[in-house]
Image (cartoon, rainbow over all chains, first blue to last red; front, side):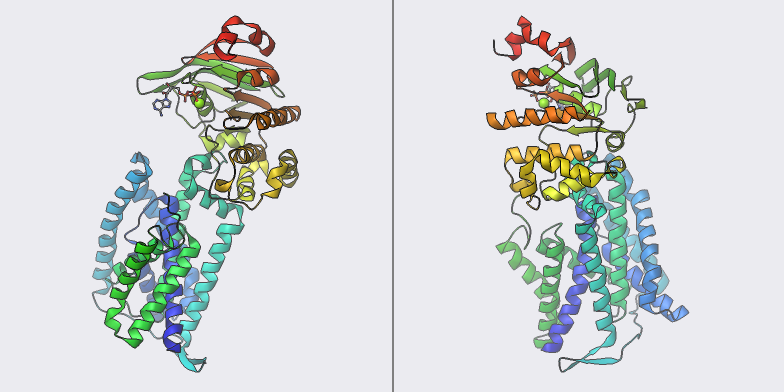
Length: 289
Length: 235
Ligand SMILES: Nc1ncnc2c1ncn2[C@@H]1O[C@H](COP(=O)(O)OP(=O)(O)OP(=O)(O)O)[C@@H](O)[C@H]1O
Ligand SMILES: [Mg+2]
């Protein structure tokens, strides 16, 4: 039981981190990114390659993966998505276009990974020694991953709420037209934030690769969970991401350990439905809009 | 200081502004009178770079040419707009709105002092620094909008119907505030439905009709013109 809750909190922390990136991309750049999970898996392969090839610890690998993911996502935005941004008349039109474009992108990324790595499941063993906590044993890599996850999510939250640059990013999400009036370059901010979200999900991919097995086709599950968490927490709400992420993680882990691991996805969606029935705008969303 | 020339603008085939020219000096309050749909808001937005205008316009601020700059660069040059409907960030707090007001690089020097000035100008905002702007009263939101614009250290401030929705007492307070802002050396371009109040504090005025400037004079002369009295002063 304690172990299930610990696992759940750790999983939930990951979900929250993943969802933060998606809600940034969606809220600020208005891109509903369906290739989001593929970016996560690509980063997981990256970490695995760095570990097996150069014996580089995945946590050190972050220093490499984060900037690379940032630049690649920036390139994706500039090449693939900014033509859509330019031609979209309204933000809603952009949303629809971006769904179609990133859906295609998901297949491209998945195809590239399939051709490189095949369909097999990958994993590697790093820091797998057991640690004793609250009378339970838990693998050290999970604790380390959770610590880094809290560090990343916490610093992002502080940056968004406590700095002028972060406030400017939120301002674009709130009202892009008004943002221009305070000298914010909306197009640049959108590109930057899209790339930031990509870097965030890539870092989550690195962390997750230390304790979960993954394959070239596992991305879609993460896209789905990120979407569930974002909608459940209330679109654009960072605190909502955290609460909904933890809720999802803990309920998953409890069901897997108490009932049947095969039921986790079913529980995901059941929880999702209940939240939407009770609070259609999400846990922290406002009813209007 | 602000010089606009040959500014034309069309929505599709509808020509909303035709070769508008105007100037605003520093320390001067200039008002624009015009009926609903005359093109006043379009004019301010076009000057601020929010609307694309027809080719040929010239907008100079001091010796800087703003004609082809995007809106976010125009703010950097020292021209701020308080748009119709305020354009503040409703989901953010007063403090965050003011913080963003000072986002232009030109506003970073002396930001703290300017914030003090704004909070002295609008003492109510000091009490409400951490309130979400969306939950504030209309008058308070108007203060946030003007305060945020002042935070950008503008040389010229464009105001689109700042008194809309304010009680008579608040309107009076607002116009007194605008005069204090002018004394600091700013140029003010003011669009107002409340023509009598705005002609009272303005130095000069332009009359805009169907997108064309049909008259331009000192505020005192405008007040006495029968056509102006009939159309805008209810007399
Ligand atoms: N987005 C738009 N598309 C088409 N026509 C527009 C648009 N915006 C304004 N117009 C038209 O341009 C003209 C000028 O509008 P504008 O908002 O500048 O008037 P205004 O002088 O500010 O009026 P008010 O006093 O009512 O605010 C109007 O006839 C209006 O219908
Ligand atoms: Mg108007």
